[in-house]
Amino acid sequence: MSGHSKWASIKHKKGAADAKRGKIFTKIIKEISVAARMGGGDPEANSRLRSAVLKAKLANMPKDNIERAIKKGTGEMEGVEYTEMTYEVYAPGGAALLIDILTDNKNRTAAELRHLLSRGGGNLGESGCVSYLFKRKGIIAYSAVEYSEDDIFAAALEAGADDVTNDGENIEVVTTPEDFESVLEALKSKNFEHINADVVMVADSSITLDHDSTRKTIKLIENLEDHDDIQSVATNLEIPDGFKFDE
Image (cartoon, rainbow, N blue to C red; front, side, top):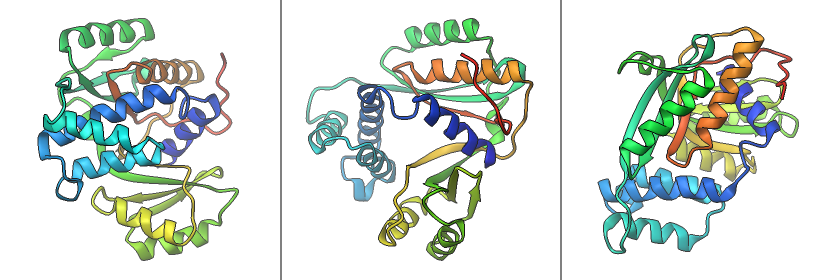
């Protein structure tokens, strides 16, 4: 989990985690629409939609935007139909990347993805080549400066969390996808304010690379995440202690 924490920290410092709110909203709207199309427009009866709506609320998306996205997904309003795809990639130095995509044009997105990988030193892998390295988990992050790890640890385990880790900057609460919402709400009820919360793919173990390969991999991930059709990028890259990103 420490690799996930450090990667989140790097993104936050570089402004990639919360920059371009409009782009973030676009990706969440896609997820809401697809979830509503597949499982119906009632979040209480559709766990995927419930998670997407929660993500929208955490991003401070206006209620009207959420409701329109649901209606477009259920067909109550005219909307675009998106296709889900997952690509498995080897980054520079051999780190694994698992890329989730929602697109209205598979051929266009595939061509643009290949261009990004070619430019960034990544290579497409065969189906199944890296996906086995990852599991879906709920991750809730808190400031290690603002809160005590012991206090969050006690509250999180009482609420049903699987684990709590601390990299010195972020305290991360790890849950199953099923327990994510209940653990998040339990901690909020005890006045712990998170800095990030999401259900994501997390690597079972991580790898470290030399400085140049690490820098190139981070840059590739950032370029991929900047693409409108790419919903998320998971990696097993471990960010070394004291790593400095050289522009």
